[in-house]
Image (cartoon, rainbow, N blue to C red; front, side, top):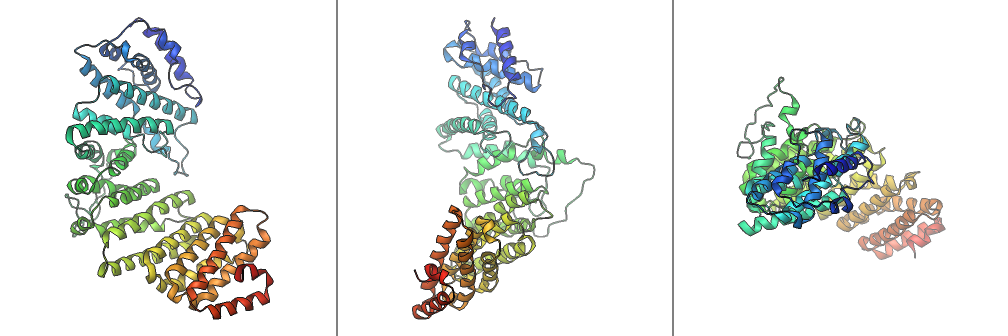
Length: 529
């Protein structure tokens, strides 16, 4: 290992430049080719300065280890290789876990400034990428065999599977995903499936970090509590101690998501007490970023959960009570960016819950329709009243109208008196063309209303036409070559065609159209093409 000092000097120079995102991630091949000695895994491990845990020092050591392991022919085999490899695996895994400052470096937190500067983030990205490559080299030399170490390393790799996280880059995600597939293959070769690995991740890596976060709506078995006690307030406990998943182990939510994306119904049922408390803890957190994560994870979980199991555990109502309040997080009390993200996660979660709680026809269908109607009234309609002046929020809510109407089918007719005035007013607003996405969503929702509520749409055709006709005329005046507005104009034309078919009285509606064209010739292309 006579070359180690030269390597350290080159590694220090690499780390010093790492704040520049365009700098190389690892030492060059020229540095590698200068190495003359063969080494053992034990000697490579001994180059690590274990007592110095500063980020730059760890980064330098990773760069050195990467050079030694990059070429397998340089490694001399010894009886102690397996033990040294295990130590290297554990050290590298520990080195890639995001530092605590990343807990406040969220793209959804608009109130607090990020706790890391851009240069520090770039260095963290570079360190993580080189660490992932070292894990890849190790896997080629000594594939993971010890079950507990496999669980630990998989948890570390799964940390980098969501590119929305501040500590992850697309390149790191690609490296981690490839290594995870190799780890899953190891698990399948030993146990025929990955159920044991997923259970171990839930039990050993995820659940302990949520153990102090209690939810009185659940029993210890993860079922609905009949008479839940009020939350106990512990003034002496610091939140960072109660919620390590939010501070010192901020990565674990991403690991949780990765696991839920890979479990089946059998694994969910066998590990219910390990899954539900952490999930509800996220949804119940006061921070909108974590509420959003919780709603996203609930949607993922419900896809892998059998409806009968939800019925037996009684947790459908618990999930409903946890997610429904998220629909009230609206501007101005909630910043628009945070509100958009939370609402965008909460509505799909509730719709997924409706599918799982009420999967059949008959009485289930009636209850599902009532539940969807409640989402529409308490979420979309009430939200629009409070936040319609925020264009992006209004767009999101109008998109949900299209989704909910399609889910309700013919039962949406009872809501036409509430929905049509909103959509018609958006289409006929004086400055509607200034924000085309809202117009596009409104036309799409109008189409869904016509398609699903067609037996009653003829009765409301005047209100439908009012919005469509005024919007058409305004676009003719304002489009000025705008492709977005031209596409909306085509959609309006298609919507009028749907209305003509749905009315089922060709003679009457054609006469109405001729009367309108006689009063305004601009409508001929729309109504009488």
